[in-house]
Image (cartoon, rainbow, N blue to C red; front, side, top):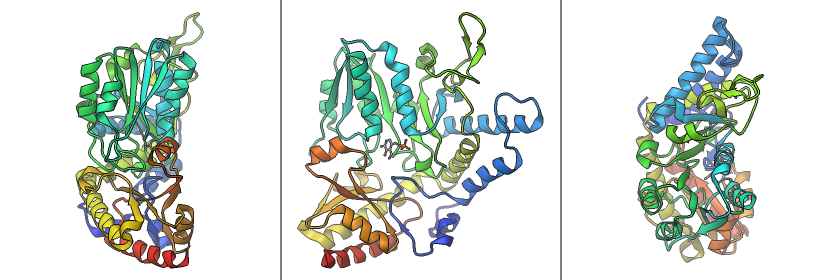
Length: 406
Ligand code: PLP
């Protein structure tokens, strides 16, 4: 499937809501037909458990599930499928990473995050620091309102155990040069474990975790055309091999009756219990969907829309609008947060919603960042493949009408 403007036809939701202008893909993307079909097919035709049954239907479920693990590894540039742990979502992945690393952290250590993190990549580290007595350090933003890379590196020292930052902020939209940041952190402290939150990068830009050289990378399937309830925690094989499991139950143990239970190999020892099988299989269809379009084509399309929207918003609202983040669309993903003088974000989102234009308003689970920006709330637009310049024109037209009402 080449990238074309009729990509919208792949998303059944538009048949139910033909006038829908969906500008909230950073919250979750819409789902293509093939993803819905894959989950339905599993549920209808072979909804058996994985990793246990010896009959053909269970073998089909296991094979399809494990093939999706391989597909995921190839899609993100992991060295092999052992580096892919399936979870419930990015939040679950980041919490799992924090629990896996807990035994390595001592009160002499520090843990570093940045002020622009989503709560899901902030609170697990803050809580881990509290539990272990380690110091929690928070790197600031720079003049572009992106993470201050120099400060992040400066704050890394010989006692830094973990550095967590996002590839793309869910508010700023700025694309962080992950490889460069990881390289500089590792030069400063080769033992620091680097965790990258890729929740807003997956599906919007090509990802190569080997090139990034981060130790852990987390994301959710639902932000990249997949279903909710599925996430991935990539971990470097050599590191995962050293870590004990933190969640216990079926599927992760070889011999449980022994005094010292024998746990399975990676990644299975980190996946206790029955996983979201249909969801993972549908995530495989989402990967196929993205590969067929070409993630670089998705990126190019979103960049065009971002540039267009930034120009249109400044053109329409001039000095009364504060556009957060870098002015250059090349430096940012398809996310634009803004504040317009005299118009509260919640009123904007509510009134746009009445016209079936979906945007997000509030702090976007990034309260520390909003404090740093000195704003209570922002309105956020976020784009994906099914958006067009017409969506942005419709938004601007309605925003101008709303300004007259408010
Ligand atoms: N990290 C970032 C940057 C996000 O934008 C989000 C969700 O918006 C998350 C983490 C958490 O994702 P989930 O709610 O799917 O676990």
